[in-house]
Structure formats: structure tokens, C-alpha cells
Length: 349
Image (cartoon, rainbow, N blue to C red; front, side):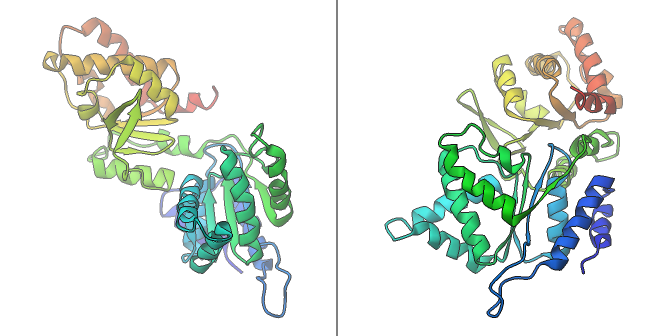
């Protein structure tokens, strides 16, 4: 029988301590795993080995599934749901013109994987809704174990979607053939980890340090995407995902961006991370003016924002005269944003 201590140790090495709900989930999963028996030639009935873990954003669902995979299932495959569906659609294109192309996709997945982790499972598109039901049932029938995380209970998947009645069969299948576990509690693990990050540490705000921090926090590398689209314009970034944006103060605010872009950015991304700050004077007047506008908008919209610089340097970020009156307010807001209480207070809003 697998041991929860193995997972706890791996997480402890990353500076993560399990809370009671997370520990209870792992115990439940290990109990599920201990009773799992795959189909064999002599036994056609397969015991439940599938998992559907759901709960609020930031409770550590991705972290827990990643830890389970790393500890016990190193030969398994893990996909973000969007990436998984992109793979499926690409394979459907490869098999177009043949009979039963979706079943060929299932065969392809079965050849490569025995256990599949699907992170952030959320149906938004009618085409995905029609495809995923067949995939889940076919993969399960062939003995592939599925471990899924989602922000929604199965009953709320594809809620109010077009032709949702056709998706109800899939919901019923999940409820019957998966252990459904609700990771209760309002504590936002991600907020907690980001809020306690020490920006005053030496070399803690360079690109490599920030990259490692984001990888550990989000359990995936977002730096493979170095451009993002806002208001039909493309901007460079240090990393980007559907939820998080990492930009360089020096590069981004040197580009011709405006308040309309900042408004769209805070609407689009749950998290914004900024590093590569430097001391500015009136020689950098346009850059400072853009940054002041961005801070005003982000602060007003209660944006989840982390700025990587030594908080002791806030008073010296701008040393010019022309924007001194505006900078007084910005400096005050930067002090608030740099405090752990800023992110902690967002949890209550």
C-alpha cells in the first residue's frame, strides 16, 4: 500500500506543508488505490481507480495531483485540459477521412499511457463536450486510469452550455465511475505561497529565481510562451498562461502601451508578476507614467499582483521631479502591494 509520507516528504522538500483537508484527500486516494484492480483476462470487471478532485481555485489541486504523479506514477502522462483537447483535435485531423477517427485517438492514447492526469477540467465548448464523453468512457473501458482536477462538481460541468442534455450521460458516467472528492476549505494555497515570498532575499528577483518560483507555484513552466495579445496588439513577456502573466518592468513599460491595454490585461489574467525593476529618473518619464497608470488600474481592480523587487527600494524607484505629485500615491500603493496583507485581503473580496 502506498504511503502518504512519501508525498508529504516530496512536498516538504519544496517548502510545502499539507493542511488537514489536503492530508485527508491523500489518505482517501491511497485507500482508493489500494483497492484498485485493473481488468485482466480472467476478471472482466474493473474496480474504480478513477479520481475526480474538485474545489475552489488555489486549494492545491494541481499540486496534489502532481505530487501523486511524482511519488507513485512516474510513467504516467499529465496534461492541462486545454492542452489535452488540442492534442485530441490534432489527432482527429491526422485521422480525418478514416472510419471512427475518435476511436483511433483513443487507441493512440492507450498505446502511450496507462494513467492520464487531466488538470483544470472545465468544458466550455460544445465540440469538446461532445468529444470528451466518448473519450472518458472509451479510455476507462480499456483500463486507462483517469485522475482529474476541476473547480466544478460534475453536476456543474458545461452548465448552461448548448445542447447540454447530450452531456448529461457523461456527467452520470463520471459520478458512477470516479471517486469524487471535494477539497473543502477557503484557504488559497497559491495566494499563501506567493504572499510569503521574500522579495528582499539576495538574487531572489532575477529571471531564474522568479522562473523557479512560478514553476513551483503553478506546477508548470509558463516561459515557453513569450508573447501575448491585448487589444489586437502583440506584446513581449517573460512567460504567459491562460491565468498568469509575467512581464519585465524594463521591457514592457518601455513599449508604447496605454491604460486601455492595462484594463484589458487585468481582465484577462488572474495573476500578474513583474520583475526587472530599476531606478528611474525623468529620463524615463514615459516608462514611469505608464507604470503609474498600470498601478492605479491594478490597485482599483484588486488585481492579484506580485512585484519582484526589494521592498526597501520602493522609495527610490522614481527619483525625478516631473511626476512627483503622481508618484506619491503610487509609492503608497506599492508599499501596500508589497505587503503580505495585500494578497491576504484579496482572499476576502
